[in-house]
Image 1 (tube, rainbow, N blue to C red):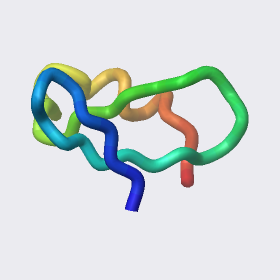
Image 2: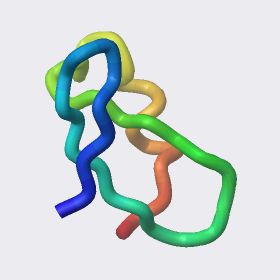
Image 3: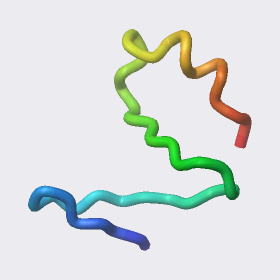
Image 4: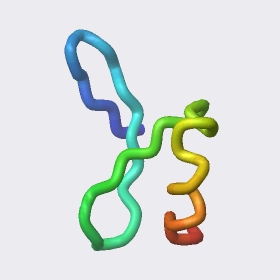
Length: 42
């Protein structure tokens, strides 16, 4: 399982595809509601 230590916290991550990096933080649905439709299916 890939883990990156960032500011003293262990963060799990996954790499998919070959496009530019994107970070999605779950739980922010009211903040990114318009952005979710632009994310590729996968």
